[in-house]
Image (cartoon, rainbow, N blue to C red):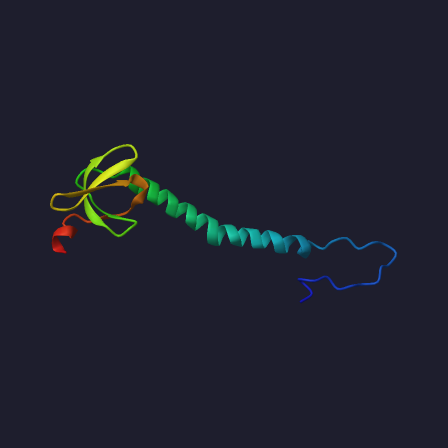
Length: 108
């Protein structure tokens, strides 16, 4: 446990400065935090933005609420999705969570 808490030593003539391990431990923690948490989240967000920008009329999608439907119309902020015959809903572009393979809705 000496790497977490410095042992209390009697002061000698020269003051002992901080060791390299005192600086390395927080830096290693920051690097691990970035690699394990921040970077994967950035990759997921980038992939989601690319998926949203590639949406096209006729794509079959799933919304965040779990509705599955076919895109009828795309505006800047809203998308019209047909979820059943003569039933159309408007959702925000950000609410589209996934694009389904063609023909998925007919199989259900």
